[in-house]
Image (cartoon, rainbow, N blue to C red; front, side, top):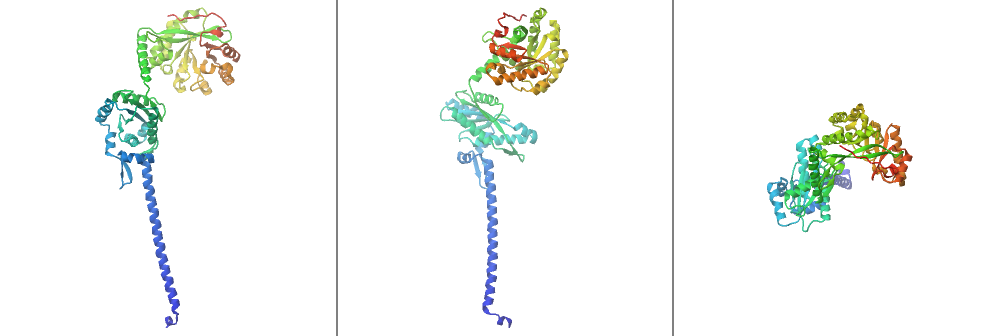
Length: 500
């Protein structure tokens, strides 16, 4: 009865409302599902893109190298992986090293050979273990393989050195070497992930050209590796220079001769006068090591010392120079002509506990007291390495000098931390002193500082009378001339030669 009393249009209106509500709910649900699906697809797409970005170095690399066969795309994982050919090369098979590249060279084909020294592997191994370090190195070589043309070959030479051989159509130019280095550094710039951690690597690269720099792969790889190892910091790309061979050959020649000279008592000493900056009189001499070669003539002191240190005979050379220097000045000191003789000592020798005993023995043999000797250690020495030796020599009464002050690790803190008697200002501070106001101020500040600490200041490399005059006015105690005594001696004829 009640339904019969309700108008039909109301019933229809309610029915339509219900249908519309149901339809709206269905549409909203479908829209929500579409939105969620779109979000999911976007997330998956983003993860896929992120995976590709992590594995490729640049879009250019991905495009060029997918065609070259160095890596393949796996649709199931959405990742690029190294092809079987790439993995074979990464294993550095003997056929690659001894046959493949040499065949190219025998055929007079131009190639670029790059040895990549990967850096950062030691720290990776220290924190994450050897396997992580090996994985990081493998990833680095894999990237280098991806970034090269189809015919390029990559292999491992050691646990940190990879080698890359790239054929070129024409003999290499500087631009080709630069482009090769740029592409390699580019692919190694991004971190690699090993043991669940991101690791940053770098590399130094040495490049040689076959057959210009060698006609066998073993020769080329060795030369490229030597060049790569010279870079102190990375990233760096260095082209092999044939002149390097001449320099190394010279080093070997000098090393052999220095060893022979030490064994046959052929090391000599020359005395360089140190002049009183005010009076012009000689106050001391500096002993300079000399060694004559029949083909090379007089060898530079720096090369002699470096050669001796490289062969582990730095102590023997120091003993020889010290003995000759003390004998040479024995008579001069007896006549009151000199205060002391200065002998240079390398930081490694200075820090050696045997050096103090050598000084004691040679002073006693020469009949000289410790006041007759000043040991000059280069300013480049690390403070913590020589601090103990400074105390040991000071306790013996031997005076100490810092040589080459003004370059390297110069600082007022180093002067305060080292108890030395003499500071020798490097030639770079003295040259042009009379025409450079800033240089003049630096010398004056250094002079005042050393004097305030109770030390003596000696200027090295004085060349002109204006420089000498300005040093006198500054209050510098002593000076060493570049070309004889010149203006420092004020016309005084002075000649001292060391005798055995």
